[in-house]
Length: 331
Image (tube, rainbow, N blue to C red):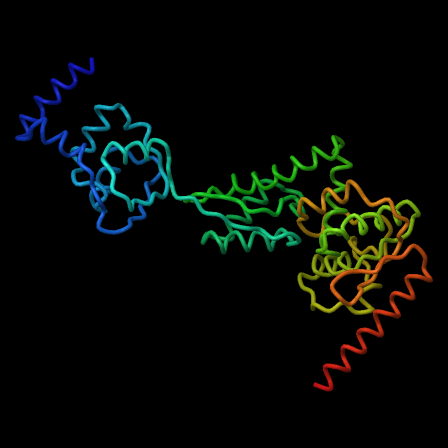
């Protein structure tokens, strides 16, 4: 059958005033684009449209030869859409192979730990140069009730056009994969997600994450309110739509469903999107009796098992802050 097609092809070429030699010269020649070309092959584009685009952008010399080549190979229905970069010398066969393989341009975006889901959506839209409303609609579709804390901060690869729903789904599945390793109980997984979000907001130091997790566990076991400032901040933002940036004494007594000063137990939802380390710390708190912690003035925290020790740590931190403020004034 292929031999017959070649005979018919040769006849067609001769009738068109062309020759088989011309055809093989066009398809076998190495063509070097005059400049780097980034070309979007639209979804659903057929061989004719693709051939026209390639010729218009100087990727190939002859769209006619391209069409005949893919027809001969039977590859016309296998050419994939996407954004391609053509900047290296290549034969027509090599270009067709790339289009069949979907060898498109790949990009990446990094989502930092500790962002709220609305902040993640804003970042993804900005970094991928896409409409934020499309991301908002996609996350709402994926999580109709509440999407907070359901995405895993990580570096993700993507292609263009951006498959928004698929990208968000991948981020959610990546988190779920870690949670499934930690527990098979969905209720426990949800608690770990919430605990991890608090840990993520409380410390960025790796060795402290299991210690913060221990404080949360110990307080819950004793029926003590967690009294974690980030939950207060999140509750104010969630109920008012904004937060000043400075937590005040009156904020600690302002009741919201997320405030762990006015309510015992875990908040009803996560307060951010936690990373892998915080998720794992939530599942494996340190075996320590700590119930309190306060900033140590150097970016870390001082932990304590008794209120007396905690108050001493607080007094030490207050003195350090006063000394730091005095130094600023004298400069």
